[in-house]
Amino acid sequence: MDNYLGFELGPIRPPSEANSLLLRVTRNCPWNKCEFCTIYKGEKFSLRDKEHVIKDIDTVKAAVDVLSFKEYSFTEANDRLDEIREMAGESGDYAISSAVNFYRMGMKSVFLQDADTMIARPDDLVDILKHIKRVFPSVERITSYGRSSTIARITDENMKRMAEAGLNRIHMGMESGSDKVLDLIRKGTTKEKHIIAGKKVMGSGIELSVYYMPGLGGKEYSKENAMETADAINQINPSYVRIRTLAISEISPLNEKYVKGELTRTNDTDMVMELKWMLEGLKNIQSNIVSDHIINLIPEVNGKMPKDKQKMIDAINWYLDLPNEDKCIYRVGRRMGMIYDREMFYSDQLRNKVMGIMRREGIDENNIDCFTDNLINKYI
Image 1: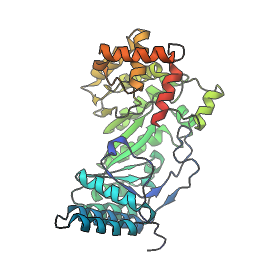
Image 2: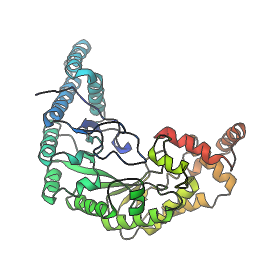
Image 3: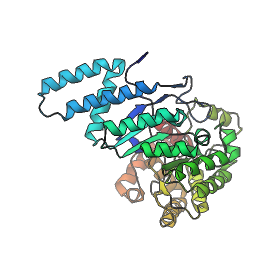
Image 4: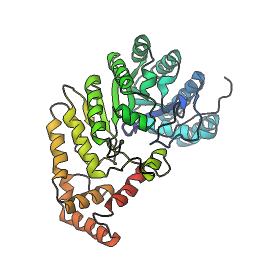
């Protein structure tokens, strides 16, 4: 095996993969031009050799075998783990900690990194998937990120081969169904490709999680962002729709559009309204709507379509119907991690604590957007 650099770990994963073993199949992002994203800027994309990924899997397996072998003394186990750590290269600590976390969580799920694993050769992916299932028969779920422009090019036959080999969920960053917004943020794909890719994944028997980003088109395209996204989702009927409220890093190219006045920033209330439009536009689907990130203002927008649709809209209406002063209290409390839901909002103790912070920091309706934006940016 040539040029094996040791165990590798990529920079991100979906929140839902917190308990998963992370295996790096590709490095960085093959597109890397999305204007809202800064994760891979300045980094070069590359495919890892299939044998290197398999070596990573075997390294984790060796560590898991030590952890599960009850006849080792504490010293013997540590000595053996130190040997594995040294063989894993500079990232040996990551290899051992990954194995420990995987073992503790029951070895049920694996996530393939980085931004677009689906761009790897289908034969290589199938071999990697089969090796995971062979080495870790307890694994129930193997997931990956995948760009719609990449997935749309994969044959139905290869998609089914991957499904049969063990790939059972793909996370696809749709962000928007509006071609205007997709072009604006340089997403490198189209609504049509979203739909083609989404149907291809669902048709193969693989679960699909799509991501929607309220606020991505600014105030100028807010309604279009909502309605075109709802239309795309209706045509795909994905397994999951995950909400990712827009958060903009100051160093992102998209932020320059706001600085130059090309777009008008949406605030929390604008984005909640946009989310309501999107939900109202959903028709005849059975998707799970998921709010699994702290940047989402209304965590109760979480449920199964169609039975929970009105419940989710009611949660949004609750916020929209609040007096402006109460909206500010809720926003500050939620963004500071002090208020998590509607029930906590009505705690006199928490409300008084939040209002005390607002008085101390001089927060009012005129400057709250700036304050909450700064808090949101801590989570990206």
